[in-house]
Image (cartoon, rainbow over all chains, first blue to last red; front, side):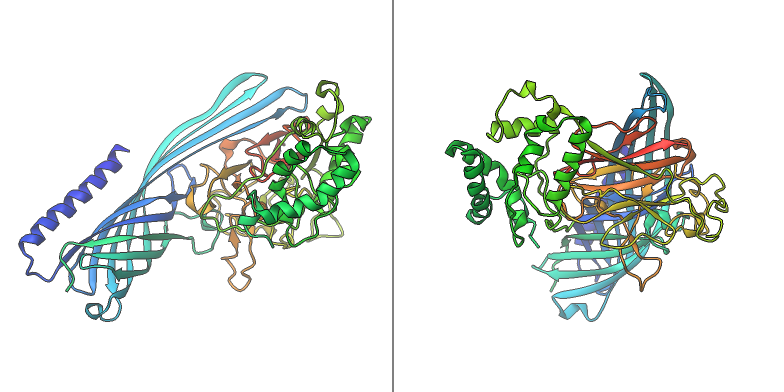
Length: 227
Length: 349
């Protein structure tokens, strides 16, 4: 988790430093912004040992972006996720000997979306704007798994593994922004994601295209006031 | 159809009345309950009351009481099992109400939006039920002398002996399945939303919402790789092969907000978007319509999970064990929704 915290820290530093530099050159047309959103982002993910899954990353997302023009912006974000499962089985062999198992897993993941955004229509004159966006999402996940089986009270470890990997997904979608002040906007995004490294698309994502979805809703702070 | 809010205990006067009227007259007639007894019962039974809104609230018959509380009358475990199954079936049909609110009729439906926790129903093992009913004054006597009440009853159905017919060669039904000569269980799907099983799939006939209202939900399987839909076998090989693991996971909110268990993929449920082939499957909530926790089924085809398995469903009135050779796995498939105790089971081939 330390590396994920580092990634988020780097992003904040980047945002602050760009913000400072922008304050010094406020006459430029560019505009820095930061998003803080509630989010649920789902990505298909493939681990090295031929296992694929769908990761759900939530609940918060932090992003910073830079609007080069009123219509075009580039945004980088970070969202963390972790999950843990443990399930047991218990019963008997056909001879009536007690048998059981405990299966456990834990994942820690981070997704870093790098999105190019394009605002539809004439953004200068409207309070509400629609964006389309597209870009890669860099996802890292660490998976630990363990399974112990017990036969007649004697435990036996079946496996105890740890693996991690980076995957890249493509994300695209639609976003809306509604200005509620000179600096603040309510922002929401919906996106579809595709990870081409996952080959078991149907069994993993439930659809032929291997698509998963993301949703986010929150606030955007524009460091330079809108006119 | 009752809304979420009205499907669980909420102390509205309207809810109170819908239960009090039929039960009150019945109990006064049958048991001459005191006012204190009745107050206790009403406070408990409210839990199931409003769920029956819109449908006639049936008068409890003496059978209800004899089964759920006066079990000593059951002469043997087999009698008791028959009685318990009949009790659950009759409550499910709406022929009468369970005064403890654990079992409800199939007309009971809890809305499901997946974004927030759902309300829960009480759940009791048979021993706990009897003790509770005794406390409420439904039956008198020493709890310790009530031996039959400690009998647990169950229903177990499995894939063993099912789904063996080769539909491509009906004249020779025992012909091995191409690519699966051993006849292993090759894929699992959930059947719900009132749909029929997929072609080539066989249902295991135990409602995964048994006694908890909501949808009829079943586990289905196929042994024939040619019929598999929405699985890795459609031109993808990494996770193909026989089913080697089955489990279930419960969650406070819907499936979209959590990751899968490692090494497992969902037991997908067809949801009817026939005009978009390839996009017709969803993770099927196994408590759909019943409330309680969100529960999802998963299967694994990875060799590290062990050898191929047969699958089964165990349903009963307590923390029961499966038959010899079988293991129950995961969570109670009615967790938080009342009803029967239900588990997925497996047996290694």
